[in-house]
Image 1 (tube, one colour):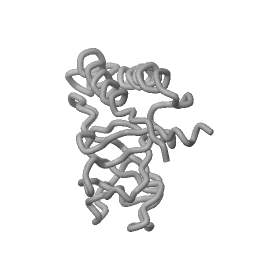
Image 2 (tube, helix red, strand yellow):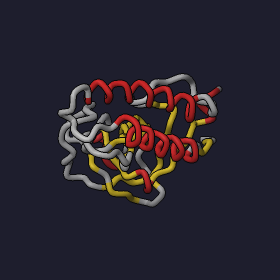
Image 3 (cartoon, one colour):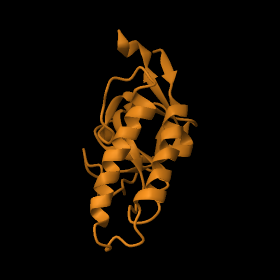
Image 4 (tube, helix red, strand yellow):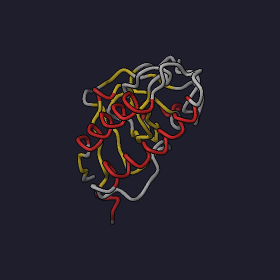
Length: 163
């Protein structure tokens, strides 16, 4: 499989997204009038930012930010990496307490979005929300979401998928 490394695009987007939120969309208190409306406005802006900084300068097909994106492969930079795996299939929220706490390079992972546990505070985009598409060593976890710290990951586009 020939892959194009798009990590620099995701790195720049990650930083731009968090700076945009922290400096222009975050309220001192989530109870403040209109704070959740501002969060929804940020989601709209973040989607546009993703398209401008990741989709358009790459060979990726148009896609929304947030849902699983099967065009963006995620690969751990080490043989194994710490991960929080959701206890339920198909859920990108809830409980991240699966007893398996590491993912290895044999897993096929797709990118969904960057993630922070607490959206009421400054955003860091510390984690990548990933979808477990295949994992020969742990087939029972296929179809679950996993959170992996961004610092442990690289992101790729499958060039072979263009043909």
